[in-house]
Image (cartoon, rainbow, N blue to C red; front, side):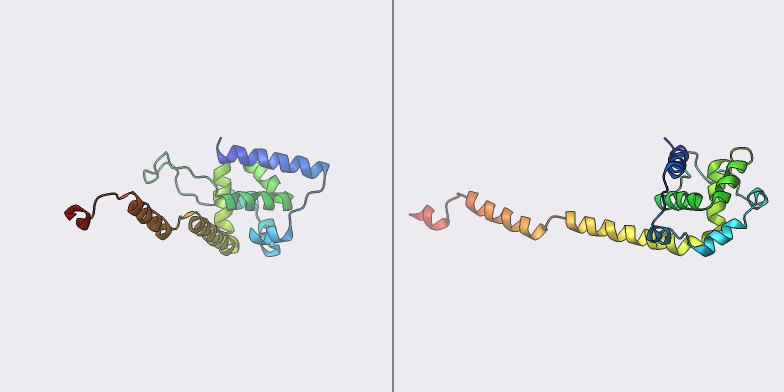
Length: 170
């Protein structure tokens, strides 16, 4: 399953839950993913022409191997879900553009290029936090090498039953 079908299903689940019950994102969650009032105001200025006139690099150029996936990161997926749930205008714009004029991944490539100045520091912060978590997990999972060496040397001493030089001469 590719990220775009997951994204569509997640969005449809979010839309269904929001129609049946009121689900709101936590303000801390919104701030973590860069969903600020300034960003929302900027996104409201988007139009169909904003996306249609955006110059995307050719997808068929030989520089990018075909097996390289152009998926959204976990942070971008969560950011996109939050923004779509906060701004119905963006959902409507996406509905008008995809797939008639743009592929879904093109829409999100353009979107993240347009909002880069607003969200780059939040995404960088999330990457740094994730890196710190990975480092902490690695340090917790790394066995204490010195303790293993001591145990091994003690085990070797008890199993070494070769006669000493003084015992051989008696």
